[in-house]
Amino acid sequence: MRTYMEERTALFIDGANRYAAARGLNINIDYKRMLDYFSKRGRLIRAFYYTALIEDQDYSPIRPLVDWLDYNGFTMVTKPAREFTDAMGRRKIKGNMDIELAVDAMEMADHLEHIVLFSGDGDFRRLVEALQRRGVRVTVVSTMKSQPPMVSDDLRRQADFFMDLLDLAPSIMRDEDEREAAQMRRAQRESLRFEGAQDDVEEQYGA
Image 1 (cartoon, rainbow, N blue to C red):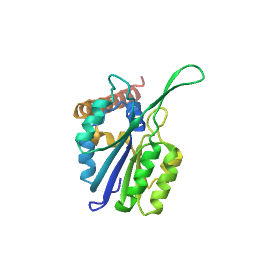
Image 2 (image 1 turned 45 degrees about the horizontal axis):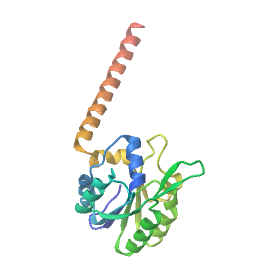
Image 3 (image 1 turned 90 degrees about the vertical axis):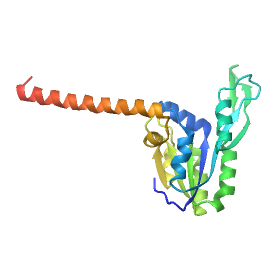
Image 4 (image 1 turned 30 degrees about the horizontal axis):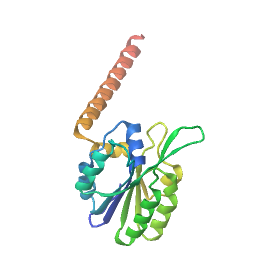
C-alpha cells in the first residue's frame, strides 16, 4: 500500500464485512495496533467503525468491542438492527450500514486525500468511483484468500489499491495470534525443507 506521511487519511470500517473476512482467515484484529499502523503512514484524521446493534438483548457480544472502540480513538456509527420473520418463519436480523458509511465518506472527502475502506462489498464500487472523482485515493482492504473470497471483483478493480487482509494481518493482529501464525509459518517452511530433502534422497538412491 502506497502511503505519504503528510496525506490526510481516514479509515472506514464496515464492521460486519470486516468480521466475516477476519473470521474466514481465522485472525483476530488488535484495533490499537491498527490505529498505530495507519498513524505511522499518514495523518490519520478519523477511524470510523460501522455496526448495527440488537438493542433488546440482555447481553450483546459486540457491545464490549463497541464500548472499547468508542473510548480508544474510533468514531462509532451504530443503529438498531431490525428483527423480522421471513416467509419460512425463520428469525432474521437486518442491520445494513452501507448508507451511513457512504454519506460519511462523501462528507469527509473534501478534508481527505486517502480513504482506507475495510469492506469487500461490491455495493461500494460506485462510492469508490465518486470519491476518486473528487480527488481521493481509495485503498480497499478485504481478502481473496478466504473460501469463498470476501471481496467483490468490481470493487477490487475500482480501488486505487487493494490490500489483502491476510497480508496486513501481521501488522494489526493480536500479538499472541501473530506468535502462533509465525510458528505456523516456520513449521510450514521446515516441512517444505524436509520434503525437499526427502525428494533429493529419493532421487539419489532411486527410491
